[in-house]
Image (cartoon, rainbow, N blue to C red; front, side, top):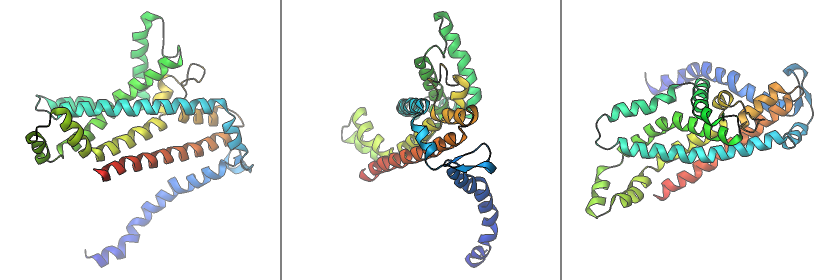
Length: 281
């Protein structure tokens, strides 16, 4: 098929996809923004109230606490996941026996659903804490580190694959040149490996940042926000506001809009920061 024919039939093939995208995403997204400015119980009885819902959001102590808890969780998880994934990737790109088996084993947790993982780790961690007469819901600290452990276990393998791909794409000539120049392992890592891995670091940082802020399934299954909503993250807070508090549907929708803007701004800022490092290198 020549270029003219492709251009001629392009709208025919694109129309179903664009229609599905509009119905499944664009329309609900626009409607969701409108409902953030309304009081409603269903879409048909929405009453416009201006910025009232947004004012209520920032006077809701549970939202402010969830925001700070989520921010702290995201910072810690981004650092730990990327650090351990990078270390594992370095080890598994060495000439070690059975590296393919290790890669498969590390990647497998990423294939398990978040709800299932949450319940599995709830049983494991509560079992470990039982001799000390503690549970994950004993205090916010236990729940926080439980979530960190769960997310590291789930995501390290996925990020490891991305780092391995980046390491294997580093030209061998650069590594040989560094050795000839007398660079030690630390100098090679700092001045050759890490700069050449900036595209991989950009991708992994973006994924772990957005995954941290959007976390819902694991939070619901592991702690459900207990004790007293102290381990409730933003997505779970929005869910509980919308479905658990009568008359707060509009506030829950306003929280969702703020949540979207926050994640989008953070993702854009992170991408610009890491991509600027790529350009410099």
